[in-house]
Length: 387
Ligand code: GLA
Image (cartoon, rainbow, N blue to C red; front, side, top):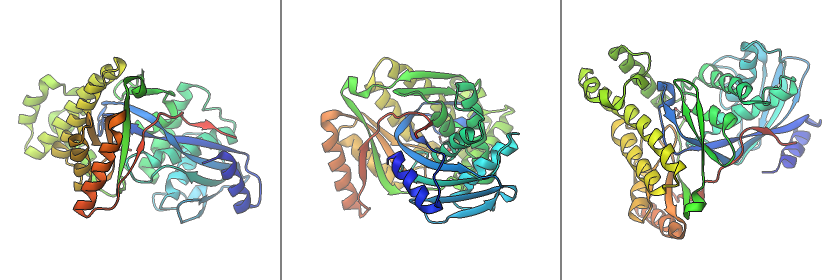
């Protein structure tokens, strides 16, 4: 998608020139799922697919929204934005403008046109890409200068997460917004959600002759739909039962005693996912640093087993794609994102890519599932102004 095309589409729709075009990337999380809201570790990479917004500030409080991909234009007064208004995808965009005001910034209305080459609801962080592209635009349009350095970008990430939690009603953590705004080109980012530190780790699959494939199973989720919130609520309940402020306080050495202290096996499994996932994220950052892609792949497969069996957020299409990719020679594969559908990440030797994609396609045809679609996960730039 070209910024110029977004600009022209804005002009056609609103009959006026936008003040600029901004964009933010999706992300693929190498490991560390459902750990962010538990004060844990995540290891995302900004994706080279992005969401763009052309925008122009208004002197009144109206927020007008339109998208090239999704129906449901919105026209809402900023003072009337709530969890119910405007609803749909507009809540992510209008909610972001609203959250600037909540954070004490003097902003008024905006006209926005959105265009994206990201899959929506597929575990690649389309929601955060929308919030963060709007946030980048609002920051510049109102001369807030919040894209200028990492500390200000951290503030933008908080604003975007507030929009998602309070207006879009998705009780997510901050990995997606942190990756989109504070990620580094060519790097994965080991994020520690307990102390807020970031460790950029070079992401160089090509140097090792491997590709990271994204296999879109065609299944979709909504993080505001309840399943995601259930997992979050279970984790909060476990923390309460164990008397800790977040599950990060439980280390691998404390795990079996903590599991035994819980009243049921489901909660014990949820805890085991979070604790082992944190350990995997730290170990995988080290493996990535050393270019040990066998270890990265191995960690991804273990992470998938944990999401499937302990956290129970996988679906049959995802499991079939993972199992088939592994049987066809992938070094590792797993569900990416919040779960309940979406995409699989697989580490594959470059020359083995056709065998893996063909095998997954054949397995899906045999199971009567829709045709899966695969592409290479390439690292992209964090949120920026494009034009
Ligand atoms: C979604 C949420 C994130 C995170 C992941 C799971 O992407 O937006 O905050 O919880 O799921 O790791």
